[in-house]
Amino acid sequence: MPSPLRAGLQQILRTKALSHRDEEIQLACGAMSRDFIDGKEAFAAWQDLKVACEAIVEAVGAAGIEFDAAGGPTLGADALAVGIAAVSNKRWFIVRKRQKGRGTARRIEGLRIGRGDRVLLVEDVVTTGGSVLDALDAVRQTGAEVAAAVTLADRGDTATDAFADLGIPYFPMATYADLGIDPVVPPPMAEAPSAE
Image (cartoon, rainbow, N blue to C red):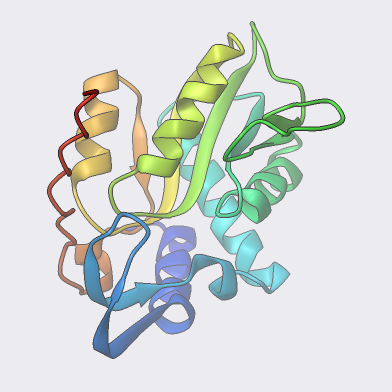
């Protein structure tokens, strides 16, 4: 049975994030689904975001995981990173999709993470985990250690398996089963074009 905070987070997801469509829509990973989860809209009100961030901090704390900063791929992690930093008195960072081509040319904004930093990697919704795993690579390149990864909602099993293979504790705060939807099975990987 989930804690009251986690149950509150899951209720917000069910009532404010989850919508069922008549027609299938394409997800970021390429899979099709009639169920859509909009974590950004659902947690746009501070009181809802606070519930989510406190539930996340509670879950990783109960597992004995300590961290110095929270962050993840923009745009899904932006509000979560700042909210978690606020409720836990920690710091935040955001990972761009690509390195900035001007100014400081950084890929990671906010806190300059590096060797000695233990970070909590966050994302709003994952299906395959592609974006959050890409952010993990960027974080590791700084020398920072990923203490754990967290998502508000996990639509499948791919990310769970990937983080297990990497030996990184992974906390989906709600799974497809918690939300009463079918898991999304990612489409098969397209063959890479020949170098010829």
